[in-house]
Length: 237
Image (cartoon, rainbow, N blue to C red; front, top):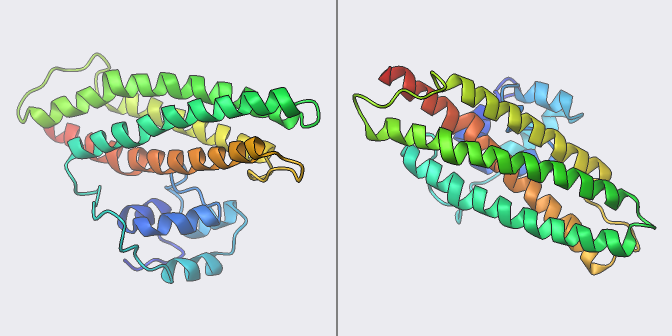
């Protein structure tokens, strides 16, 4: 695809997933802020759009990347990917970072009070994601799969139509984005202090990995799954 300053960010990542590492590098919000043009997103992120465009155009496709185009792949496969890759990973990674954060707070909390704030932010993030995943796994995703499996009729959901829960899930995603930004601010962009021990450094690295995976996870739902599922529902009703 031809990427310009006026291309919406979500179109870039949907059509060219190899652009995601570049946008991550420049701190461009492509999941919750995907509706903005690249120029608008760069302005919000205090980045030079010309520099970002140059990096995007110089990015070669990764030959080892999976050849799955989620915009056209079966919705059931996309849901399974979100559940088995992202939901599973997030639960495991959250358990890891909370364990590491507790150890670092116990050993270094007095000298580094920012770790106390990390633990507080992680508690909020963990509680929000636990509830969010439950809503998706027990209500929204089963409804989408029911639509896929029934070409002519399916049980009308208690929420009337899918727009309401999708809006709720996207609001949750915005909250998650806010919590991730808070964690990044508290940790000075996940840069450990000079006197940090191995556990301290492992915590910050694990937090950065968690952030990156959540960005990709939210992108798949906001920019691909939800729009496709809403379109399918409009065709079924």
